[in-house]
Every structure is written in structure tokens, then in C-alpha cells.
Length: 444
Image 1: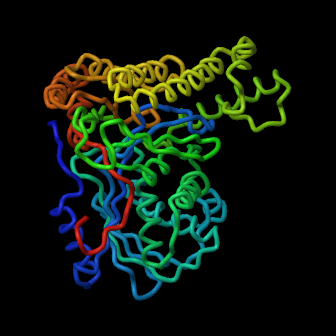
Image 2: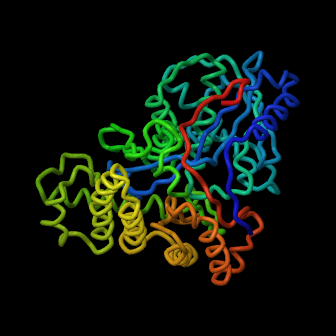
């Protein structure tokens, strides 16, 4: 298990995927288009997007690459760098949400000896077709494509599902000449995740991937769906500002792997937040409002929190304190105060453990190791916090030292997980990145 850093996507990575698609399709490599769909991190705003809270995010220079060429017909043929089984379908097939397909007996026939993920990895492509069809788009051109994630990276907790969904959306839209705004694609990817796959998450991941800009903190109000980019004072539309060079982003992997759709903890927490909102709204005479915590005023929570059962009170406390941390974090980022920004991230991590009660022993241990690492400004779980990794902002000149420290110390605490065969690199050193995009035959 080592430490990895570097630029993404490199010219060699783009050339490699173009060559692969050219071989699959029999077309010239210069015809191959590549979707770059980065992973995101959420420095502040943990677990509150599904309640209409305020969140912050930025993309990193790791993610999904989807190389493709438009087909001559409606055929979609896909191969994956992760799974062996090829996916074939038609882009004009009517796609039904997973629960409806299962009810109607339309699930894929699969060999019982084949892992479930192997058989179902094409669901995101089907979900993208479903989302586009559901909004009345006429799809007639399929694609031949090859999809892969950044090498040496366990993407757990980095919005990999949203990155994959967005990659397929952009590819199908490009092949069919559809002009779709980022805001529309946020909604399309929500349909993939919420309706097609049945995951009760919010729109943070999609928004970050589609709206981010290098060096900026993307702020979104998940209730109003309004967003803005927060520029640090020394990075104004270029990649050379002092703050941009002052920090690196560490991704430290726990070795835990479990899909969100198979973990009841995530959807249970969402339900608990909704139940807390319902009780608080009833107490304030606003029971007709949608039961989400963004509809509850902070003073209402303070006045009526005693009416909440202990677990519900903790979930609500996390929501209101995290919302406040987001707003303070925006000010810290805009003023270039990385120290305060990092402290808020660490406080967010602590509240996720104590109040939202996500995480498990390995993740908590990893969080604690990162707090002791040289140069770390702040750290917390990434993603839902039921698997995956921790993120940390670290002083740039101490990033290598911090990463080595984390690798050594975590392996002492969790030797088996730290040597997980599917783990990839134990710690990655990353930079901020841009939004998802389609690259044609020239590197950009």
C-alpha cells in the first residue's frame, strides 16, 4: 500500500482509452470522445443535502473516464475496466426503474455463479437512458464505449455512483446531439439515483461534479437549488494562486467496501431526519410543510428539541450545527483562512460520529490517525460514512510526510483492511479539479 499523486487525466490515459475504444468499435482513435467525470469531496455539509441543507463541495483530479464513439444505429455496447461482462442494450428500449422491473419479472437473467455487481454494472447506463427518456428526449443513436475509474483508487465515499451516472448522461447526450444544461443534468442524475436505483440521497454529488470550477468551493443551497462558486482571494480564474498551492487533499482509504443501496444505515438516517422534522413542524404548527429539516427554523429546534427521542434529537442537532459550519466555512475559504476552514472540517467529522452516528471502528480510527498526521488542517469521513475513506486538507509541503504517516499508523491498527487486495493505494494525494466535460479528439 503506497502513496500516489499526479495529474488527471494525463495524455497517456486519454490515448489509452481512445485506443481501447477504437479496437472495440473498429473506428479511428481520433473519432473517440472521452467523458471526464471527476469524483467530488464535500469538505463541509455532511449528511444534510437530503434535508435541503447548505453544502460545499469541490471536485478532485481523480474520477471516471468514459471513452465512446456514436453507433451507426441504436445499439449500446459497453465494456468496463472493472468488470469482465459486456453490457449490450438498445438506446430506444423503454427502461423501467429497478423496483418496477423486478415486480414485472424483467430483471436480467444472471448466472448464479457470477457476482451480483458483475451482472448489474450496466444499471447506470440503463438509468441514464431512463432519465433522458422520462423527460421526453428522443434517443436514436447508441454508443460503443469503455468506462474505467482512476487506477489504484477505491472510489468508496467519493460520489463514484454520481460520476458514473453523469458520464453516461454526457455520452448519450453528445452522441444524440442534445444540448443539456448542468442544472438539467443534475435533475437527470437525481432520477438515476432516486427513481431508477432507489437510493434516497440528495443532489450534492451531481451538483459538485457538474458545477465545480478549479480552485473554487462550490456552495449549494439544496432547498432552493441555487449555487455559487466561492473564489479564494488569491485564486482568481487561474491555477497559480497562492492558496491553490498552499494545500493538497488527502484521500485515506479504510479498506471497507459496501454499496449504499445494500446498506440500511444510510436510508435509515434519512428517515430519522424526516421524522425529527415532522415532530418539530407539528410542534410549531407547520405540520402541512414537507417534513425536511430545512423547513424547521433553528429557534424552533431549540424550543422543541426536548420533544424528540434521543436519536432524532442527535440527527437534528447535526443538521443545524453542520448548516452553521458550512456558512462559516464559506467565509473562511473566501478570506483564505485555511486554518479555520480545516478546524470546521474536523468539527464536522466529530459531529458525524457523535450526532449523525455514522462510521465504524476502522473509519473512526482512520479519522483519528489523520488528526495526528503532520500538516493536516482538517479531516472527516467522505461520502455517507458507512464505508470508504476519509478526506483531509493538508499543508502542501507536508502532504507526502502526512500520507506516509497515515499508511504506517493505520496499518498497525487495521492490518487486514490496510492490506485489502482490492484496496489500491492506501493514501492518495490529490488536487482540486474542474467540472465534468466531454473531450473530443484534442487534449484539453
